[in-house]
Length: 595
Ligand code: ASP
Image (cartoon, rainbow, N blue to C red; front, side, top):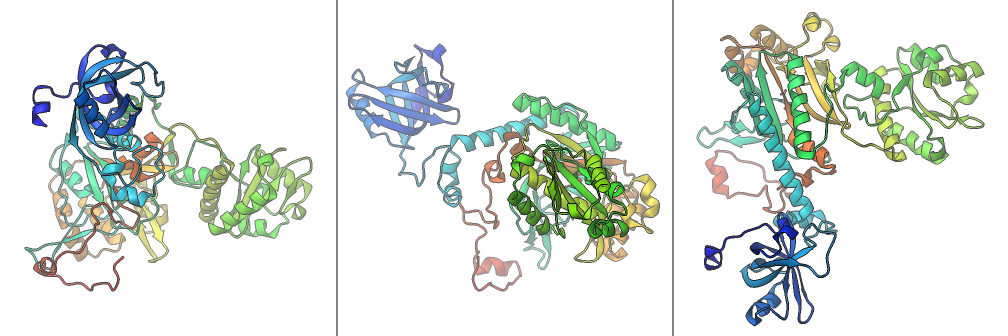
């Protein structure tokens, strides 16, 4: 190989050759996508990361070279030299389709067995087989381009943040646990038997301590690890654009991130994201969309029917309102024709699956039909229609509950489900900020108040007084960035007052001693001059996924894990020799049958 490559290095990537190269002698290297032997003619499609170019061999090709061409098979690695010429039959489907290389030297650099699946974009082979041979899967242009695009996004982020004076700091991977609400991956220490490191759920405390250290602006494209029971489309390790800034308030962070988003979309996709991005309070999001991550690419906002229905004759509605709850609706405006009675019943079943007691509905037409009309007076119906702007052709879906949040959340889910079922068009990139998040949320399972973001988040100044008396009322200086119904990132202004931080730990159920053991170093650091600071973490994987419009995280992660947290190519996690475990000073109960 070195002889061939020695004097003549590769001159071009396959996909870069164009008509302007006609007459040039070039050298390309890549994988055989397809070799066609048409008798006296051989055509080889050679592929590298840039695309495909055709190599041609014909009756004018030297015999030895022609014979070599006949040996070329799919996925062989080949170097070829020759002169670029115009193609006699052009291929408008590929960028190099007007030219070909009339090859006069060929070298096989690596042979290939028949691959277990076709290396084509539209590969129908099951994902498990593809992931087992991920290096082949990644040769598929669609996937390769996704990974290359991801690298472009990461570079664009770095460029922007470095330009803004951010300093990239690597924080450790073997750490003392940082809580972000998930389970830690633990790493046993061999030297300190019985002790464990945790893999970071985020670099949260290190970035805060970097602010105490005076770095002023920190960022890192950081790997984070969360040992969660894997729900659909999560990865146990993921990448976060992690940032922190000193001497800032919420506005400063939001404006900086808006600039970042705007820059990255322009730089990588030539898409303009207008800024400032809209800001909604958490409460407003819940009231209007029934979600703290609303998809704003379509309307169907939630309508409160309480005023229209107060004292109405239908007990389901009246009792919900009387109990302090509400009756709320979404109007599927103009979709009457598209929704059969059966479709509405299916939506009813869906609503029940979300915990709703039942779905009330009305479809307006020449004559109105609905589930509750006979319980209503003309006036009451007219009041509902007016409140919901419900006219002929519309379908109104209504839920009632004695608990406001419940009815809102259920309608929020129904709103998205209805849009999915109706195929409502959702285009573009619709960002929003959700601000003034609640500080605490009540965990029904444990019966305790837990931090909605993380315990280092500052409560809003005007809410501090409710910390003891009314936790549900405490809002935080926390903000989420949402894109097309997906939470892309969250962040907050942090607590820097050691007394307040200690109080929050206490309110979250940590005794003084526990807080000292777990976070004593943070409380101590705050005693030595902590600047006000705040930041956020943006999910890089999800951002890239949205930019590319793909539906699986595995399409934007080079070597992903399956939903059961396994990596199929290397077959990990894997057992290790008993001595290795013994050396760590730990023992474990071997499951009877490991999954
Ligand atoms: N550490 C947070 C997270 O991982 C982000 C932040 O508050 O900066 O969600």
